[in-house]
Image 1 (cartoon, one colour):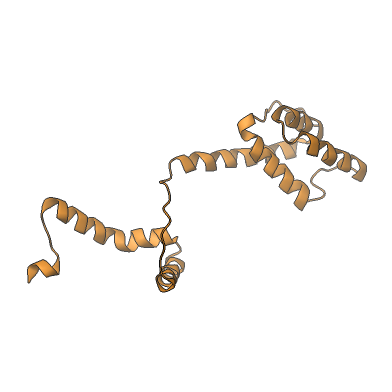
Image 2 (tube, rainbow, N blue to C red; image 1 turned 45 degrees about the vertical axis):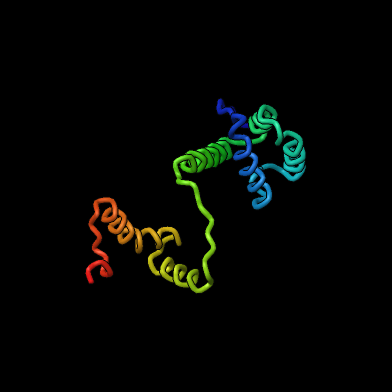
Amino acid sequence: MADQNYIIRQQDKNAAVSFIDNQIASNSHWLTMDDTQRLGAELEYQNVRHDSIALNEWCQKWLNETQWVQLKNAISIARDQIESQKYRPPLKTIGITYTAWQILSELAKHDGVTLSEVIINRLGNNWLNLYNGAETGNYSNKSNQS
């Protein structure tokens, strides 16, 4: 349908398939054609969705310019998410009591942040001050002052 030069790369195939699957499942009129053509396109798609070269050919055949733009945007968003994951510190899993979770959850809702951000924002400065004091030998802890 559309004459596009865009190529879906192998590393982008999963993002493309996820986007197309979602569009077909949630919007029966996304493939804007008559019912017979749409059913044919959907059946053909099921056969090509596992191979990036065949998927490209299917997209060239069945997607219009607007759909290509939507697909490219979805791929771009997926790439950005993958890229941002590379720079995100690794997550740790911890066990906390239900009461501690309730407190953190309420603070997170109040502040409009994640549980991790509550800990960092509300306790981080105190910890950094204590940690830096320990490194320099300055203990401003009340128990040391008595």
